[in-house]
Length: 341
Image (tube, rainbow, N blue to C red; front, side, top):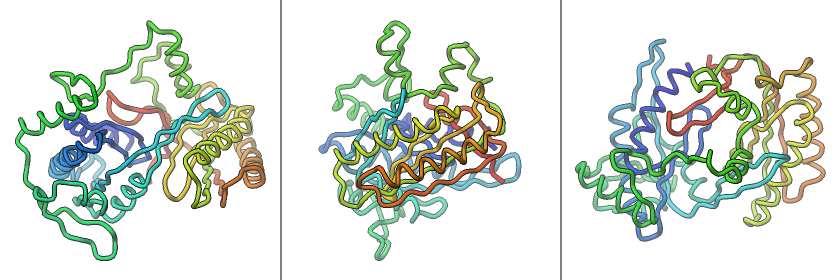
């Protein structure tokens, strides 16, 4: 199933990269992609995103897997300002993205059915409406795209170059990549800073020169999900401080038990930390007991010690999971994912 999802997502992301977008986050079988643009270029960026989505839905809206399972694609699009936060948790660094546009894109995607593209109301107001035929979704604050004027290949290629130039970037001829792979072997200081964003499991394999195709496996692990709901009225500075406190608290509790934060997600419903116990080289006896002890400590310490926090919920599960890389060969991340049933 993971190989099937990777092949499916890889084909979709190939189109995203070709149309000037980039991958920001993976979340299970969902992905968050980004077209970065200054205010005056937003209509161009939205148009490129729409053209990309049109092509993707046409080619991959329904995907027949070798196991007989059909995959269907739902797409939501929003536009607006995006905030980037980097916080420290123990010896690691974690980054979060947040904004009203991020909340809106989640809602737009949920309103989308298979084969559909839904725009948030803000995105609709910012786009070039003359190119698009849309149907308002009554009372939902969103519109469904029912048709659009297609850009010729030369037109969208020129638009990609235009966006890159407006950002002061050099578009790589012959590729769809918005940015090249960062080579850090000649800069030890930069390498040390970037490695803080990588998990211990990944760093160990990289330092041992394990081929990437051999870095994935199915293994028994224990997962701990921490969901935090912050106060509605919290500004960016307070949120960044709270996220840093949460990351430090969780890391400090799970690290002695060989657990590590594998994924962080921040949406309008709060923040989620996915922690994994049992990655290669980090296996302990009585792993589930360690995870349960950590869950109780995290619940107690975050509930009692963090300001602007309204709700804490913690869940623990255990079983065989895919531990390895997901995504596109040029843009992928390491994850621990339970098999689908």
